[in-house]
Length: 52
Image 1 (cartoon, rainbow, N blue to C red):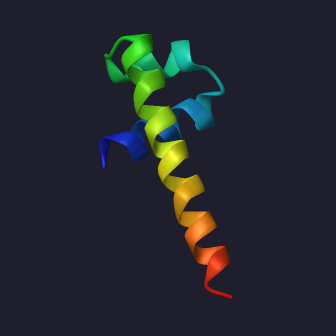
Image 2: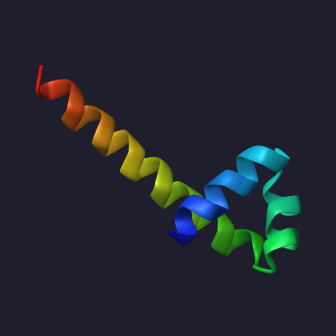
């Protein structure tokens, strides 16, 4: 769930730096979590496409 929250704030604010400051985490940690969320979405989209 945390990954989704980080992803949301980074997208909403348009800045990893601002999102990290708002959430009280380091920018590298936020970047890692956002990357993991992106990978989860990409893998899920690929699995969904192969079912057609």
